[in-house]
Image (cartoon, rainbow, N blue to C red; front, side, top):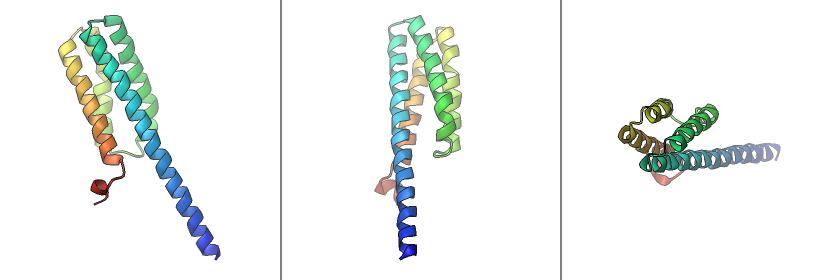
Length: 126
């Protein structure tokens, strides 16, 4: 009976940790994606100051959240995302809007791929 209770406790802890991780990942993907979309809108409106501020916010938010996500996701995607986000501020400062837009779209694509690959589904399990 003690083993059964221990097994249920361990299973409950693992299930809770998994759910918390999934919810946190979804929250990070939604937050970063939202800021990047606003950055794309600011670039489309040629609003330099707003775009610069949003690029800084994306960079700061990503640096804070990357430390936790590195344990849950693939390093290749995290490295590519970190590299792309780090280049946003220089693209804004150079007023190179077309390349900024393509980099923002790349960030959104990587974030979507991270979410799809980490989200529990039959496709990911099989």
